[in-house]
Length: 404
Image (cartoon, rainbow, N blue to C red; front, top):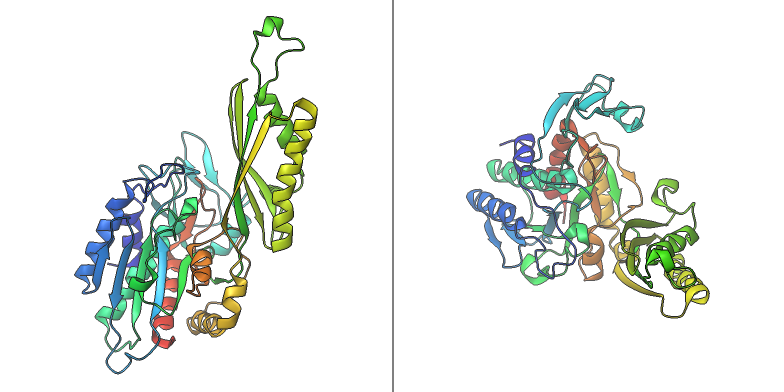
């Protein structure tokens, strides 16, 4: 089975994770893909298991004579983002001729190089796209497909000699919980790579410091006909709070190393309302300042409307892994060499997000991130070039052969 066929199979599994369920995995449907992958790895001859929390682990022994090499790990996540539906995904492989791609004629949804200039780099290639009603799931089922196809290549071609290889597929990465129950001892790798990046060639060892915040507003509801001087509308407090955030520090206004506040949910009534937002910054000092600003803005609301009108809850999600990777710089050089060996120019870019590798690096497993080839994650305009997935298999095969 080639990498495209695998990918098209995996994206049809609905594995969307969900915050706040209190379970691992957060959604039971993630077990279905986990079981499928475990069976597939077992059929390839690997020692594989799916544990009770939905993690899949597998091990491929070293080629004879290479058992002493440091065990290398490859990791991807199985879940898809809650930001868009992952149910009934209908992937389609289309040639890109330079013209806009019609994703959904009925809804007039097109994937256009005018809106997404990176498409122009794919001229003449085949792209896997959505039907405009769901995300695609290349984040990170492309990584899963690329890793398993790499394993199959090594199994079927014993002349491709390699050291011990450790495989893991995690649930709940998209809600920041992908490393919560990761069993490092069972995994057994000395270093690893997450295959969870974007466009082909990306090599990432810096990521955001990240936190999530809930800001709750407590109003006072009175019949609107007699509300003058009495009503305090929690929804309007929430809107005022959001308006106080720096308007130029949002995802749509920032790039590179620039941090942001991302308001992704506002819900409530006159009596109670809640704003949920993400806090991101590569710099640790600025990250702390951003969290402090959330409380300072809440205090502004309290001074104006009363001391008990707003509560702020901030929870750190992960931290910039650069400091954990730099003492192991050889694994970055190995990745660069693997890209170059198959004709791909490696591009070191800061991750404007996070990966399981960020948390795993802080747990003692150095774990930078590699591209999958996918673009426009977490939405209906997601796509991935078939050639990029095929190239990533070549990169991973080379990495397995030359790591250690």
